[in-house]
Length: 511
Image 1 (cartoon, helix red, strand yellow):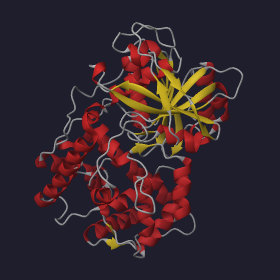
Image 2 (image 1 turned 90 degrees about the horizontal axis):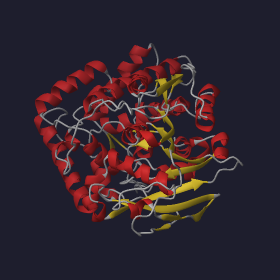
Image 3 (image 1 turned 180 degrees about the horizontal axis):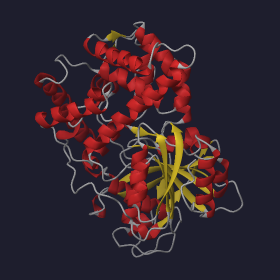
Image 4 (image 1 turned 30 degrees about the horizontal axis):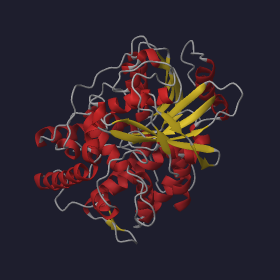
């Protein structure tokens, strides 16, 4: 299937595991008494009171971490209609001057904040933040250990993600094949997930954030959001500007951008990152390419087209087509530290082996060596995006957009086109419109952007910082997706000083 590239903060543990290759249960108690105040003392509507006044039960999860479940309304327009479970994990502040909780979201949509903190606490936050805050990871509604979107078993997911079409790319018959696959997936999601599928939109998740803020005992939200998590954080600021504490939005998404413009901007971003990789590769040793960057790009384009028409069989029997190879290329482009491994993968594919490419693609898609999917990231990614954006699967429109994508990103653009098919017949439709977020009245909000971020290109950080009435931009000049705790001390100091001391840079420090 053609899917827009997931914008997520790759955890250190996941990346290390991939490169080496080429929970606990919790309960919460809810005080459902009427007209009670929240743990912060604020009053809420009577129908929300049972949720806002609940008391979390924290259990030992090992490694110095605690976990709990919170309950949130399934539908905020009708809180009595049922509830969803939200999985939390926290690392209690190590210092003597605790500020409060810092909720962390790694992106996606569909990435697990629970696993992000459980597996990669020191990658998500540094010692300064860990001393001052309880670091709290959470799985948004629809994701992971929370009430989750469920669609396919592992064998079905393999076919959905890696299955090859019979017809030629771009033809009516090819579109019909993709549409049938998307419709079957959507029907399975609706059947397996039930009413939750219609409530996994980002506005509902932002309302969950406010609920979590309150039950954690914080009067204002302190938040560190990466990638898609910036959209979640910005949406919170728009809905609850008076409750904004200190929000860091790293690897920003422009909330006003349409689905197609997101895809186009990402295609250009990854094409630029691919060129940056090749510039570095050709200047060093053990590069599988020769000549200029342009000639190497031509080679990669020819390779993608070659496997698209004549797939390479892996040792496990799967066939590597163009879409899977693109995923394998994109995954290590998220961080420049993975470029040597990308060279190794290219070398194996150029010599006719698909195994290394599948290792990268599988890591991106959450598939383990036994063929099992360790998370529901593909399912939740699709479900959330399908309800957060508007789609148009008119073949005439999609073909015009495909031509525009290929013109903007000649090597990879065609493999990111026709993505609207996946959501065109989704059982729950986007309502409203994508628009700028200004969050009038909110406290200062820090937006961090990396100049050659492929997944959330720098222009989005510029746009979001300009839209927010209280936005302040921190620029990191460099490669990779997101910057905090993985770039340089300039970025880290700006973020830490803001979150811990409330110091907003007088101007962009240009890190």
